[in-house]
Amino acid sequence: QVQLVESGGGLEQPGGSLRLSCAASGSIFRIDTMGWYRQAPGKQRELVAGITNGGSTNYADSVKGRFTISRDNAKNTVYLQMTSLKPEDTAVYYCDARVMVVPGRWDDYWGQGTQVTVSS
Image 1 (tube, rainbow, N blue to C red):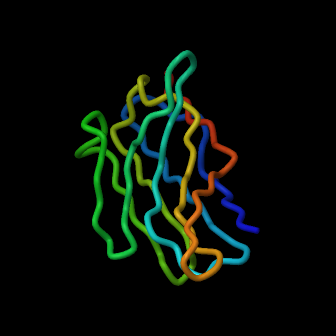
Image 2 (tube, rainbow, N blue to C red):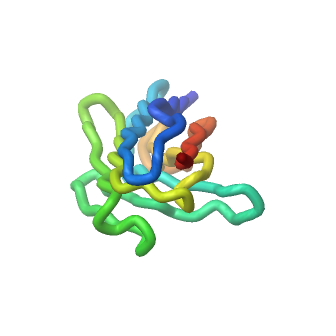
Image 3 (spheres, one colour):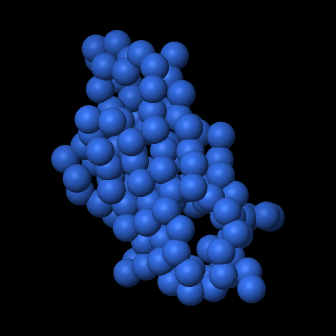
């Protein structure tokens, strides 16, 4: 019913920048919070950044000041601008959205993930 499609991952050098995008489509009545998570090999998935429908944001301490989350509600799209990348940012990045498909029912949906590799 709802699909989230991420794009923008890849290989970048330390200190470089990447911009991730995630577009939601399908039977969407309303989207509340959207966010980005990441999972490195051998580690648990962790929240990177989140943004509410009204634009309030929160970040993991490890990315504060380097990453910026934003969204375009008209396009049902969330972005993650990543700067000053570090090797420890290497992970698969997943987008998440809390979606109302029918009035009164909220469900969480995930994208398929996009690989970000930071290496010289």
